[in-house]
Length: 421
DNA sequence: CGACATGATTATGG
DNA sequence: CCATAATCATGTCG
View 1 (cartoon, rainbow, N blue to C red):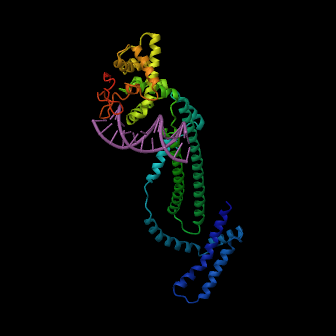
View 2 (cartoon, helix red, strand yellow; view 1 turned 120 degrees about the horizontal axis):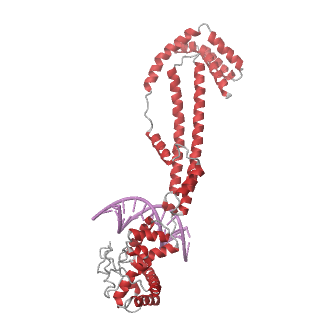
View 3 (tube, rainbow, N blue to C red; view 1 turned 180 degrees about the vertical axis):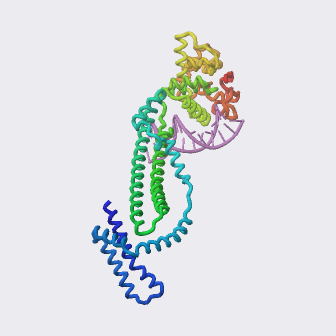
């Protein structure tokens, strides 16, 4: 603020210093040879410039006033106006209206969409808490992370707004400053309103380009935040042991047709405290990975076969039922899938040794437990639960052709007509 | 720290 | 729209 009077002051000073220079200039262009005189003048001007800062404000005002009251002033002013008239036209011709920057619009749209710009929504943490509360239900830690995201977003938003406001204020300040300056100067030199307007628009352009940078970096920050918090891949958590157990049990007991129905998925999702989509993901991954490397999953298959067998055994020992040969994907599986889980297993076991269900379960269990290390004679559990349903094409349709790992001794199961869906 | 496991996403085809 | 296959990015274990 201290500069302002100084600035005017200096302008006034320079203007006056330049004044005597004008004839000098003409002289020069007309091929003047007296270099000494010119040097002298230049020296004077420089001297004046150098001493400007030493001049007092009053002195400057006095000089300005003197200039304004100079008898030649109006005439000179008119001349300047004339010259201006001619030059301004050419200047104005050069500039054209530019359309709104598409880049800027893009940024604006994004910021608006992200809720960074636009209406305030109750302010940061409150909004975050509300959002967390609203989104409750599925996954408590999910909403916690979400609120964290919201908090960070509102932080960005706040910074953005303060900065924006600062720019706005600076822009206004500067604009009024310049306008005052121009108005002040318009007393000594011709300044059209158009010119002021142009100057203001130049200033605004400059500031808006700064704003654009702010918006750009805000967008970047939001993007980074998004990728860190909302990209689920980044916050992948392995499912807990229990969930994996449940999923694997279902998978291996429905190995012939590991496509849980929608209800089954919901049931599994509820049991595992994960979403249906996650169940679908899991099965998708499991199927492809199982198929890709069946050998690797043999042990796991045995384990879960044993587990299901145990479950089924205990259930049937207690409850006398469980011998429901219904298809595993039928509605029954939705209500009590532990039992229908076993259905599949029972079927294959039964088909192998023709025992009663319960006998088959115990038998399976014994088999599996006894040969965790190597293969005993005959049909092993690993063979029993090996990829029965996978056909030569790699599909999962029930096909009589047992693939790869299974020994050529007539494929197991084969009776598996699990035709549901 | 590197290799492998695993959940999620993307590309593609029917 | 769903299943598969490939791929990404992180988690985990030795």
